[in-house]
Every structure is written in structure tokens, then in C-alpha cells.
Length: 229
Image (cartoon, rainbow, N blue to C red):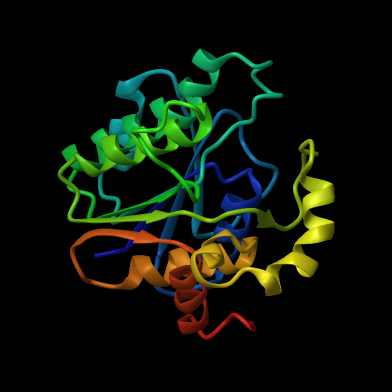
């Protein structure tokens, strides 16, 4: 039976990098993309399905027959003009709607890009609290294998410019060597490093809920045999 992967957020920096690896890798025979509008690319292994992301029912048909869901979806406060409800509809609703559909359809693996510091108990940081609440909701679904990735600053080519990130990326190579001990998990992560880590984790047969921060992400990427540290 053909192995099928599904990506949410394939137009973003992590999703597009992951897509490139999935299309080259022989593990998955098919790659399904859930999109708001079709991406300007094609590949024999790739199929795009336009859905209404705000409708929970829209996720059920495309997740049928899928082995692995990769959720790389995310927005910014700039995009939603500071509206917390609009932000939640992307960063919480979409991952959770997809997880519910995945569980109902017998999907084996669900991989979620979250954030270092994610904590559902936080009251002072909307972003990190929401990431934690989203992780919690996804993990409650009956999916055999759940991988949560918690990178810090992500390095790579973005289509959009994010405030403060340019300066952070410039300083990252200078500061990263100083991040040791408990600070190591805050080291920046390259987009291709994270994508390869996700692909490596998805291929493992083990069941359970796994949380990956900097050290795990780096080790998984190195185990892929395609990443040069």
C-alpha cells in the first residue's frame, strides 16, 4: 500500500523546505497539500487540495488513507493586525481540526511545529500559552505517534519579513556559541535542519508522544544522513 504524507503550511518556510525533502525521499509515495489556493508548482508525487480551513469537516476527506500529517502552519500578529481571536483560528484551530480528523481516519503519525517555551499554564505570554494549549489539545487525540517540535529562532529564507527577526538572525551566529546548559534549547535552528528532523522522526515506528527541543532536533537531522552540522 502506498505511503501518503500530508502537509499543512506548505507555503511557509518550514513547510516548503519539508515539501522539497518529501518529494525527493522515497519513503512516501504521495504527498498531499492542504492549501487555501494552489501553489505554483507540480510534481508526480504531489497533490493539492483547496479547503476551507475554518471548517472542521473539511479535514476529514483529505486525511483518509494518510500515514503521516506534518503541521507547519502558523501566522503572525502583523498578519492578523494584533487580533488574538484571528491568531487563534490559525495557530490553534487548524492544528486541532487536523488532529481530530487524523485520529478519526486512523493516521499513524502527527508532527507539529510548536515553539520553545510553549506552556499552557503561562498567563503572561499569549503566544507561548497558545502554543502550549495547542500541543495539549493535539496530544489528547488518539493518534499513535505524536512528535512536538519546539525550535527557537528559525533561520532560513522567508517570503515575508518579520519584525525584529533580521537583527536576531544577524546576532544569532555570535550568541549561539554562548548558549550552553539550560540555555542550549534557545539556540537558533535552520529550516532544513528542522525539516530533516521531522522527516527522520516520522519514519520511526515507535508509538507515543515525543517532545523535541534543540538537542533532539539536531540529532534527528544528523541521523537523516542529509544534514551537515
